[in-house]
Amino acid sequence: MKDESLDVDGSVWLRSGQQTLGGAARIGLLAAIRESGSITGAAKAVGMSYKAAWDAIDAMNNLAGEPLVVRASGGKGGGGTTLTPAALRLIDTFRAIEREHRKFLEQAGAAIDGFAENWPLIGRIGMKTSARNQLAGKVTRVTRGSVNDEVELVLPGGQSIVAVVTHESADALGLAPGRDAVALIKASWVMLMADEPVRISARNQLKGTVERVTRGAVNAEVSLAIGGSSTITAIITNQSVDALGLAPGESAVAVIKGSSVILGVDD
Image 1 (cartoon, rainbow, N blue to C red):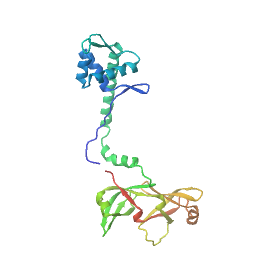
Image 2 (image 1 turned 120 degrees about the vertical axis):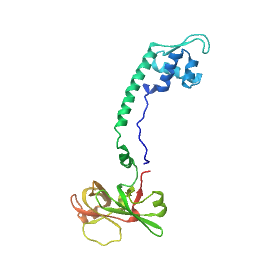
Image 3 (image 1 turned 90 degrees about the horizontal axis):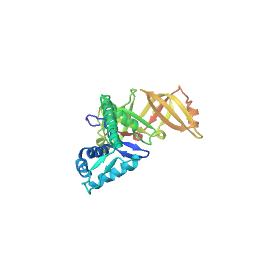
Image 4 (image 1 turned 135 degrees about the horizontal axis):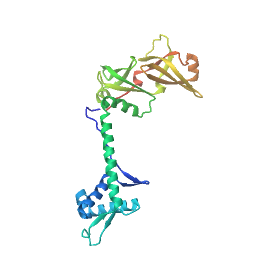
């Protein structure tokens, strides 16, 4: 997120059933009619055409269930226009609501001190992706290769995960030490093994503790707590669950190839 101040904003609208009776523009038109005594003068004051002003008045009259604006005879712009007591009450009511709404916005704005720091977290929480695992971390190292780069992220629990991405992707994402990033990993790309020393070619081996095992007809979802409130989920067969003795509280290791880790950043 760019380093810009954040503001809270909003507007007030009055509704009648499912229809919008009016907002600031229509109430402003009513107030201008009260001041000028004519549709022509009021429309000019609020920047509306004469027809648009009358369309708004007709809509408000219909939705209010009683007249709000009464026009005396005398031809276009010449007979004078007045507001009914209902319209005057509507203006006062809207202005009172608007004042309270403004107070609310001011209070909400005062409450967002430090919001800029929390904004990336809100963005990550709201992010939608098909990847089951979304691990937030900070880039600690970028190693340039002949074609691809290796990008290492340290996770909140202290463990690291390495992703293999192209030069173009690393540059486009602005990946550099200190940059926040998110590792996206499909659950089907995560392999599990018992917590025993094993030499394998997969770059990432995240140690954790089984939190839960959800069995299906053939496969099971196994979630590991890997520290720092982070969890990673794998989908493996029920047979593998039994063979590895995976159960809540047991230690296990999540194994992920670096090429299976997708990286994302906040804009």
